[in-house]
Length: 115
Image (tube, rainbow, N blue to C red; front, side, top):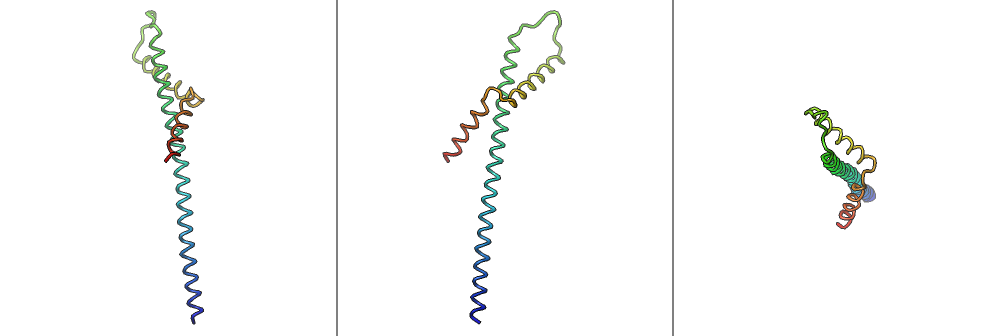
């Protein structure tokens, strides 16, 4: 009779250990997913920041060009030009830009690894 109880206890202990291992494994997987998500979010945010900076630069450069009196600008043209500049900036940032997003990522990786 005592053999049955010891088998039952061994089985119960094994199940508890297996459950603890499963929990640890799922926590590790959740941490891995969270880290991958953080990396993707950091990449996206750094590219958006670089795009924003490039948009400001393009807008300021365009402001230095004198306006022609031959064709007066309209509100529609101003809106179109603004949207075009935004697309230029997005495209530049997606294709490497000025390298600012890489610097941001490297800086923030160093900060995250110090913790």
